Image (cartoon, rainbow, N blue to C red; front, side):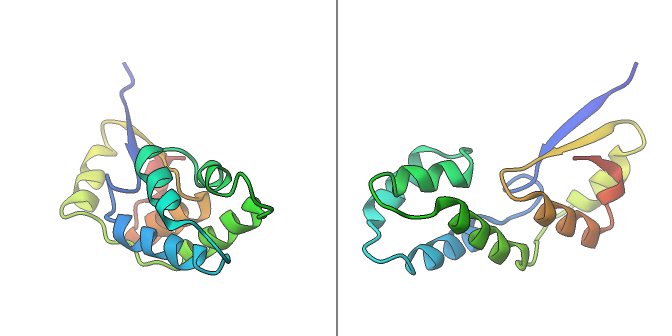
Length: 127
């Protein structure tokens, strides 16, 4: 019988929240009159919601190109260095022998590929 494991990337395999949040905030500061109380509320109450959807909620009453803004943020996130939690890479090497490993992420696929490739574990995952 085949066994499967599904992992989330951000916050499970890698510690990324603090750097990711700062990139989002810095990018949103470029949008004039951004309501950061609303930003904090949306991000606090819609965790695991796609970034594009969160941005649509934040800028629902304004003419902001949320698709372009999402791409801009993901481009900046692509250049972040991944910090895997201690023991994760070793555990993935161990689990690959007995399980088919899958990855899910709210981040962009190119970012996930980059982090897994750099850690030497990309080929163990179905994305």
